Length: 390
Image (cartoon, rainbow, N blue to C red; front, side, top):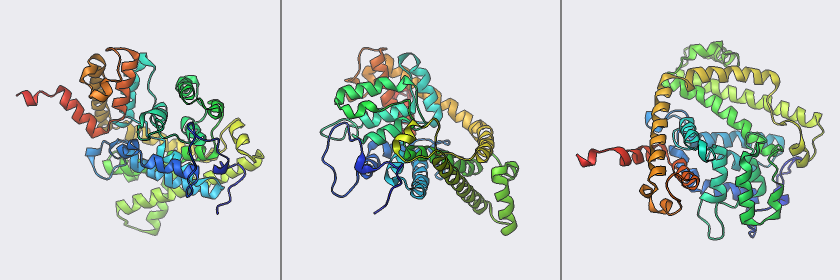
């Protein structure tokens, strides 16, 4: 049996679920949460949701699903080394992107603009809505009825949050009438498992965006030689293996980069835990800064890589073109449905108010946010193409 560190989340001491359930005889509560996430509809949809490059541009680019699996692998490894609960960290890693709409950040930007006068849109909030309300699978409750610790970690995936999430949280508490959930403080830091999942996300997308960017021709391997955090790996690999083909060189570079980032994170996190005398989950949550982190030196090097990827991948003209098209598709679908909600599928139309109301806007937003890239493209064609009338 795994012995957890004193500052880990212990499944035997969970604060419980919003709707009480009998415990499993074979799984801890966090294992059960992970399994529910994997079996959810929203999880399956991620296989056709854009990370950076839209699915039809190639079979080997990351999707939200493959990215989440890579994040989960890193999170489990880090948690194991730190004595944390691996299952909770994995659950948080697998679920962190469930609320993303189609077409990656382009879709999120478009929905944010469409919803500006109706309460806004944020993918973390949407993840919360999915897992507490929109997943309609179980007979006794809406959502997945996840543990307090899982819900807390997902809401605060990027650290403490402003009061923007509070109305959704209050609505959920009122519906559940569960006193245990009322101490879900948005101003505190989340568990170490949640902090690990968040940093694993950073490590995963930095390294796999190098791979995807090279594959897309957004930059050449030679350009990475000037990026300190990556360049020294390329030089050493080429010295060890002259004339190595590009695919092997790329993989070996990203593999070593992940290892270096992981090793640095473990050293810095252990140092912070020891320096601050952290011995409990409560101390983790009440601490004034995150405890899972890269060293200042490594964080500075990591920012250089992020800046490079921002300019050479995320702002590449091919990505810009796709972003522009994707935003128009999402905006046009939204405008159509909010003005004529009776053109929504019946199950969604029945949830709406009159055209143009905040309630109708939120229902339309939920419908669009759940779409995969290819479904959004097909839905747009069904709504606006006149080919069948020709």
